Image 1: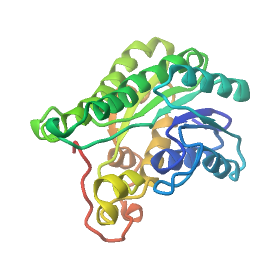
Image 2: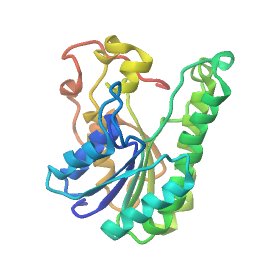
Image 3: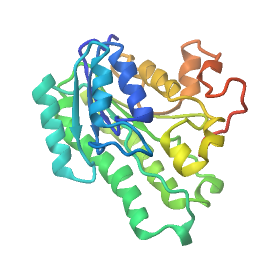
Image 4: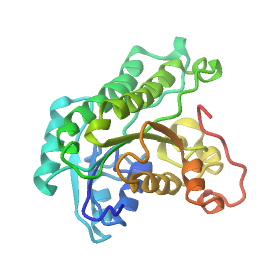
Length: 272
């Protein structure tokens, strides 16, 4: 299915994986809505909604930069309205915005617990809720959420239960939406990387440059997302995919070019 002229709404699209997906889909001719908080650049993170939109438009398609904190329902509604006014509708929603803190119960402040659940769970739910009327009108509707397969092995819950349950909640919503929206022909899937991905979160919060050097680039997620979103109607729905399996299904098994450091040992991501 061609994505030419389709409108893609991406939360957290100003940098990292979100921006990589935006640029990949823009290269396929899609209109892109960059919806994120970053109206001003944070030197630690780099990039804003405006710089990301400019990169999209440099590829010859249309972009909309809209500042939105998905914890604020009014901002979500306003962002959707702006997108529809500019592009006439929404075809694809990518839930990429997320908060992370890998601490155990004793060391997770309530404000960080609330942050992860208000963004990862409540925010994702409200974004889908507000996009739903427009997705129902699309001939190629798809919701793609960046969240992992649900693995209830205690080793994934014990070290950072607050974060883990917030991400599993996102995946459970994917499974629920696939069933709820099947009669509306809205495909719903989740996508997660096999390895760590070189992003600001990895470099600043998780493992620094050492871990970044054991990671893949965001391009692997962008490519996998494209292959998922190209599928017709409900060919892919109700799945929690790993990037490698999507690429393998397309006959792509040599993934060396995605490594940040060629030949480096790769670090498996959380939950895998």
